[in-house]
Length: 67
Image (cartoon, rainbow, N blue to C red; front, side, top):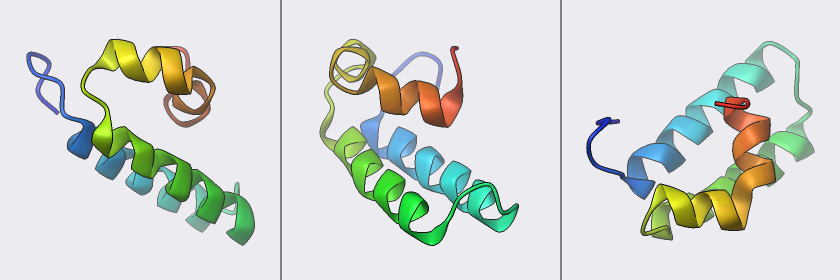
């Protein structure tokens, strides 16, 4: 992801990779991982990081931490 330009597409891809890594480490069950990937698909349609923060702050924190 470029620090200069927001990309919902790139963020959704990163979310999927994060979920897959957690699943492989045994930190997530199959159903929980599936739900997170499905929810993260909404990132693709987001026009800005501010929109994501308002609409999906809990999911963002769950996947990427408090950053």
